[in-house]
Image 1: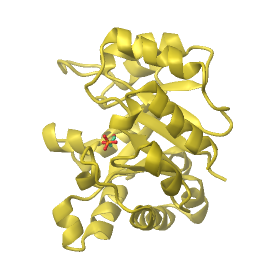
Image 2: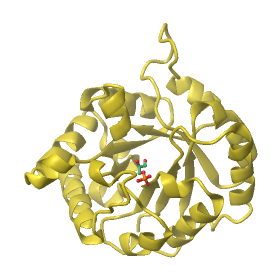
Image 3: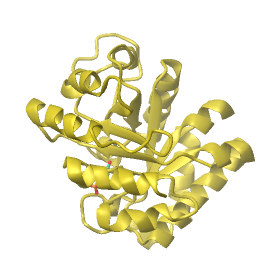
Image 4: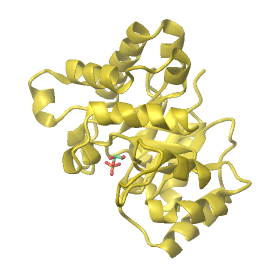
Length: 253
Ligand SMILES: O=C[C@H](O)COP(=O)(O)O
């Protein structure tokens, strides 16, 4: 039985006061930690204050990206050791917006995934096809290749701890959600790929999220699917009330 994981990705939204107010409201009503993992992936600037707000609670804090090197002359970047040292536990890797606007690739994502594990962070590796790829019937092949390249050189034990977020690019921030059946089918393809790259046990253990216009109105159906173990949520994670509803649905799945 895989524990559901609901992660909010705030992207480049919120100011410091809003971030703290959100954490205060959410931590007061968190569902039981054994039922769902609750993660907020915030802008780097707010990570330390969120870690402090969430201390002694089960709310986990994640970053939205990181550099793969421990330190160096990389202006503007944040390293895995800096994140770990700040109390951050998760890090989103290879989000489609990072791939689209910041030239990230499967290869750079793989380096970051490996660095995250090396430094004790849990990566959420994002994969997903464009509308054009979906319409030309390439979804399965695209996602399989992303998974294979993104997980290269991981041990089976690391792969079992990895979280993969399947986010069809055409469903992000558009209000268009993949049908629960379509999302489940692709998450099933990802699980099968993990079985072939590692083993059945790893495939059974790995948690696969769906992301793309997830909201309180559609999460229950998504979470009822065999291969969907959680959600990576943008817009609907910005308000505490909405995020708490998503957590509730995760806890009851
Ligand atoms: O990381 C989250 C995804 O990009 C989904 O964003 P969204 O829920 O606003 O569509």
